[in-house]
Length: 388
Ligand code: CAA
Image 1: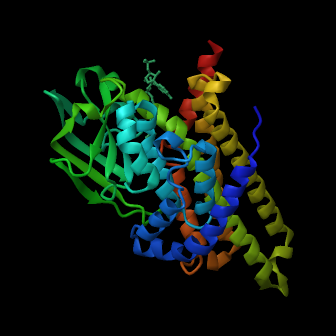
Image 2: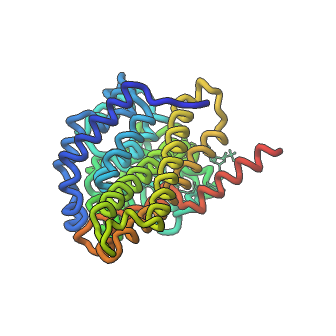
């Protein structure tokens, strides 16, 4: 299946690009330096309806789907990866509700998440359950019409600022990953608190914290799907959000490339602009080719996943393209930002210029929503399964 951006999506790209250049770019260095969540930008994005494009219209979104989420995240990440996470993390947090919520749960939560009135977060990772997401220890034991949650999560994007958390916990510790269940937890439930806030290499300004649950009562009505569905809900969520991280990586890489190309035109050494040296031209040509290839894979994945039902796509086909898009685009972002720093020479290493920030930001795209080693494992498994 090929894909083409519709006129509506092209317009969305232009509108978001202008907004990012006019309102976000000038804030990017300060967000990184101060490591403070940019509430004003959250309000700006919410006001433009950018937090609800992945949510169907009947639940308060615009229903433009995954390609639109990717476009928005890419364009914002071109100037600030941290700001683009406001959109990406909202999509990740609400996806389990969209995929597995009852009508009542969707009506209760999705409209305020789509409008940005409330922020959400996805709480899967634990100190001993990172790549091995199935070995979660957080325990949810049923008592009457409540579950009592106990345990600890770590590395949670939007921790401490989110109003709604989709939390994965075991309802049957003897059954391993088949005993995991997913819950909607609100920030003010008793027994729920925020732990340590991490100091990070990049995407600073996007808070990452521990979550602590001490016999936290969660209404049974907040269980997503059935007991034991949790692992599948988590995997199906990540299948649909990894291309968004791919789009973020493309945006970071494009931003770094654009900056470096402009710089080489202005920088004069040996009596001429350094852009005139073929050694640098070849570097830039390779960088641009990689960015474009990554972009094509990300949007191919986004359109395929968006139309998966109509295409009769299997879970394996969805997972494969999703993982490929994040794997390839994030590796490109890392290579391109390292090369962009190199093109600026000593200035690239200085904090006065944006490239060292872009390089630090690129690194996380190879790690979060599944390390690139996990993406390779997922891709390889789908190949071997198909050979059966
Ligand atoms: N869709 C639906 N079901 C799936 C699935 C998918 N994509 N992938 C697996 N499953 C099902 C399997 O079919 C299997 O069920 P059955 O036994 O009924 O067939 C079950 O789940 C177990 O699957 P596996 O045997 O493949 O499980 P595994 O433990 O061997 O491997 C893994 C799974 C792919 C390694 C997985 O643990 C994984 O993706 N790990 C990475 C976790 C991750 O991405 N964490 C990121 C945290 S979020 C984050 O970073 C966000 C942030 O802050 C920004």
